[in-house]
Length: 386
Image 1 (cartoon, one colour):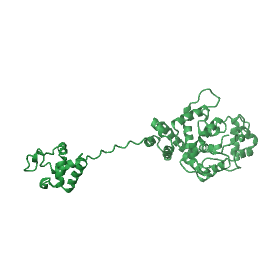
Image 2: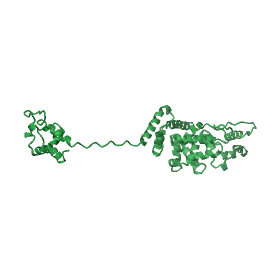
Image 3: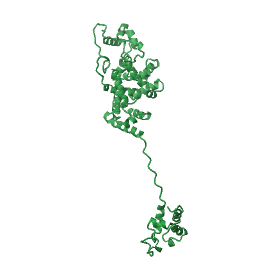
């Protein structure tokens, strides 16, 4: 049975009434079976459910009867237009169904049950499964096929029964419905819509397994436009997962939450072409977060213990003890002792430590060697004059 304008769907097959039988019930009985109440005027229910009057129910039943090959009360034969667009009619053709027809609807199911775009492997798996089941390629048709096609029902429930979906949709029915609305429409449910779907869940007229699909299928134009917009972003996102690093990065609670947050920024006015830059940035962020950190830089080499000694010798001693003394009156170097090279200093390290420690040198402390500098030389010599 097709639910008018996204209204309720039967949940138990044993209560499913073929459209051809409604006419024989009479308008009021059939209306009650359809959930239509008296002469209540048409009204939007959270922009989802509509309850026509008895008169309108009769008109609807006439169309349903005509779709079964019957006629309306005037006896005029009518040919009903199929209420949903089917990718193929099961058994009507041996020609294989193009799995590409299911790309958008599978992305919409991922949004409804996981709140995120499909990964490439998951998308490829499900488009082939739905094509193989000859299922409808739109959400409204899929919602109807849930009750008549066991393969479609099993595929939909494989989403709802997954650990990811169960982990995403926790809490009571109000929390569940609020999360579904946000994942599909980027908004909270209005009170009337929340009450409607809550009642269906509370009385068992619908289960969580197919509630998300029915809510999506019953969406009115503003909300359906948002679903279409998010599905288009999801298609682009999945297509951009084009390297193994990106495939590896798009898994796990953290990365999936990051992508859900990205989808939450989509609006009805989002420029899809411009949003590709956001998709690229998000994927690059995911890859960067999953790469191992670079190795730490090697530790700096230990300080050269001779370096401060060499500076002191150059400043305080080489003025005299050099092949080219700079202090007047000391040419050549006293006693031929020169400290121009490291080798010369190391060769006389003991002598240097002795005369510097005693204060005898530099001679008359003409170069102003400090006590701290004398200690540096003494410590260096005590360490073995490295």
